[in-house]
Length: 636
Ligand SMILES: [Zn+2]
Image 1 (spheres, rainbow, N blue to C red):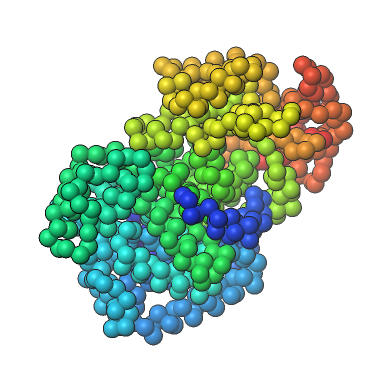
Image 2: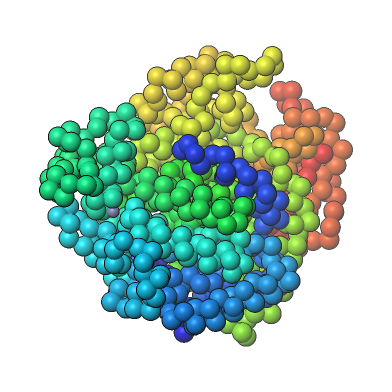
């Protein structure tokens, strides 16, 4: 069955991937604006509709509260090179009917799967193509593949029948555009590009070499010193200059690595521009990988998965299958996704971040853990992507368990809108450092800050510019630096502009803490000393997380109980947190009320509280009587 083979490729790819400007701006805002509400935190319920041989689960997804589904549609037919014309038409009709039905069930957006690089079963790939279809290409699919520095085909790093096509190859792009058109005309509202990756050795095909030559010209890096530019018209000359460019690449591995990280971005940009000629508001996203918490830098270096680059041409950022499903392990260790959410938000140019997390390589997640993951995402200004692809005997039970959380978040979506995260400390993530090292120290510091229950934000180099035209009373510092007292950055990582900015920050009373030479945990003590009075003090178990956000006239505290253990794909066990005393600093007074909102409690329950003044701020003290999974405190 097609879905099954599709998923076996897809999942085997995940398993093998364990480690793993501008013209984009204007159209991207159009599509985001059109779908802004659908993608808003709390409103959006993202879900895959297929897993292994369980496919077409739109009804189940909708029943569990999802409203944006990721469908294979015609995607599997695409990477297998297309069936005979009649069969393709039959399957397209089936997809159209399926998506029309899904929309009637409440699905707002259907995002169609297209693999950005896969040619599956090359020897039969083009066997069903008509003469007319074939005429649309200049070369056979076998020459669309990524090649090494000697022009020899690079074998798949995924194994199996998978052959990696080059995203710079114009014929492959033409084929992908055909698939984009078919998916959109079958009823999809957007495209999810899977595996937008370059071979770890890098592709040296003539199209990549020509693009690399342009890249060198356009980035301030000296142009390749070829005797003449690469030309298509003179075969002998072309061969020589191609060889010269390949030699240049070998001598300049860093520049080549940087170039490789722009290939997927440029591919998305072209696909998006094309898609919007067919459907004006088409959303483009991709699998941004990040399968493991410690690969933010190294996945750029190995597989050219550079989220900072890719997100420039995506409408929102999907991150798949990190093993950080929030939970407590039987040895008491706590796993969570907050550090990844914070870093992703910093490097994704303000695009919505959507993540799917798993535990122990298991694509099924037990119901309370799904609810916890949904609440964790919202607490970090992001959305969760679920797999409501359950065996028939679990469906109703899972729907019943998950739906209340989805309904709760939708009902209270206003709590997630226009809120700013409290930042007792801001962590600098110089993302450009990936080109020098695969070791991302800020990732480990973010994990330590999360474990320490510290309210923090991450900022990358994009945000490090001063606002010299700041109005009276407004900070000249960019947010979130303008909202914090403590900044963690290694002075060696700062360029002159950033150093000036940090001098302004320290000149106005801010404290710079350098992580240099310290373990993240040792750094934590230093950071706590620098912060002094924290935004929130929780007298609860170490598995409790409290995340503070501010909106005009109110403070919102997301409370998460991470003390839930996974027993199996469908069973988990909650150890509730009880009588948790919280002290929260708020910037307004008087404080009228403290409400607790949760899918697990009666609505709008008021909590007793006391208020004291401390250094010009109100400190609100209250007690959360019981927390099973998640709740939100609203202090007004
Ligand atoms: Zn190439």
